[in-house]
Length: 280
Ligand SMILES: C[S@@+](CC[C@H](N)C(=O)[O-])C[C@H]1O[C@@H](n2cnc3c(N)ncnc32)[C@H](O)[C@@H]1O
Image 1 (cartoon, rainbow, N blue to C red):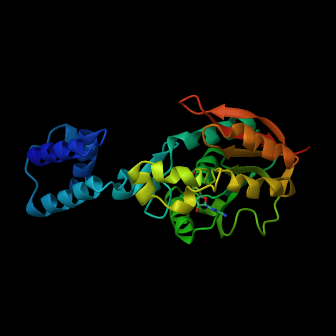
Image 2: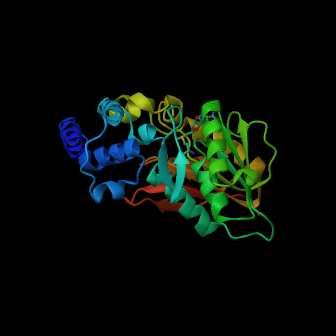
Image 3: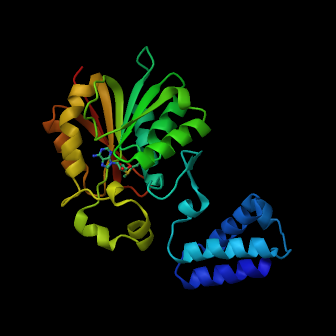
């Protein structure tokens, strides 16, 4: 196995992958059905024929640019394990900024919180928040049935099924509310920038989760005007934004009658979450 690992890491490095040894070990651990740290502890035995073939298949998928999260079928977010598969955006560490912002701003209101996640994808935002607030209940909306199936599976595996509901639809259309907190990480890449995204993102992740229209702001223009209607009095909205979009999104929220309260930066120092509040 050690030689197969070395060879895979060499090929993955030559292909320009940034952490070839680490990724090769993760793939080998998947084939052997063990934790990667068990592998590091030293398993010098060769793969058997079946394992060698399965390992090479996984390495080939990675060499073709497929994201590790799709190959492994999972990604960690907010220290929870989320199933992901093609058709669903891979949760990003940047989006944990929304969870931090929500936890910082939203105090318990005397009753269980009612949460809404617009464009829920894998359900990572809604389910992370439900996991933090044991009395909260929430609804995740998405235009993609494939995404909702994954979100529902994640709710089951995280033991949150009883408190999460899912709805196929366009943003808040048809919803009544009221919600105490609305989170959303909508598509926000300008259409013209899609072609210059990293190939693994561009070729493998769903375009409907990325493309935000000519200036990247289409989804905010669709979402913002309805927030006041479905937010509870003094309810919170926390929206993820791309680099340089925070002021424009705060202005859209202001024009919709919400008070833009501030932003929260991600680990790179980029304003990543815009926080706003409805009238009391
Ligand atoms: C950037 S992804 C975010 C996924 C997940 N919330 C996350 O943070 O990883 C945007 C999501 O919005 C969904 N979406 C796009 N247009 C939509 C619409 N008009 N109504 C509802 N959901 C939409 C996409 O299918 C995708 O799952």
